Length: 283
Image 1 (cartoon, rainbow, N blue to C red):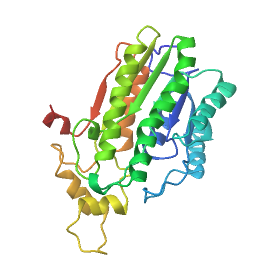
Image 2: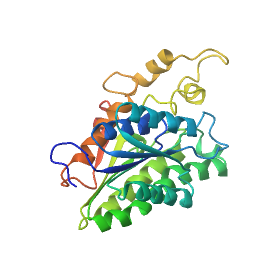
Image 3: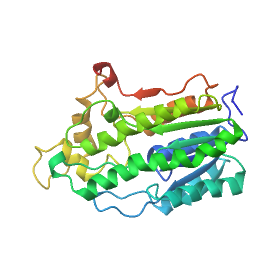
Image 4: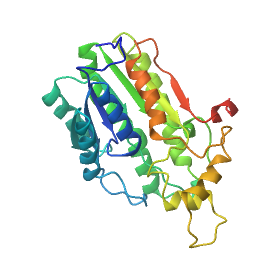
């Protein structure tokens, strides 16, 4: 099933966190290249997360966007923290399409707090979603890919998985963790025609970032109750990047995902950083 043309005709992709943001962008791009796409999202509410999570309605909107463009998509509500939910996604995929060629383990959350202020729930919800959720996804898709002797897996980390970050240590820990997980799995699958790689973006302009909690974290000097616009926060984010832009778009990450799933199989165990030059400052 290796693509020699950049097309993904007759391939089947699973995208977690596919209701919106990066996940939706990935699903649309993979479908445009010919893949049938299964998107999952809509986790149970989390007490530590103050912004709205992806919903079943978001999933249906993604499916509608894919089908309106002439593609094929299936929505399966799923909380990646729940092993049974993730296994059900793979089961539904195999029932409908008969194979799994691509898995993009993208579902994730972001919350804030200094380490000594984090509650047990905030820690557990972060690790269960961003790290254990990826583990559940990879474990569920690998057996079928091994039977096929083909597969392309991409895991979403972050530049927060390459350096320390104040106020989001639990997030950084989860994103460091998925890199170790993906690199180890890549070595375990080198004889099976399966590649495992990681994308590590800087701040992406999605609902996970454009919310009041993040605004207050990056603009703590603004008066309480003052309106914090995208423009104000954008200027704050821009200070961190050598390329003076506030953030990247989901589609900027998608281009790297597409490269990794259409690549012939010579790239595995790699972290692709999409960072507006920020990685040039890292060891």
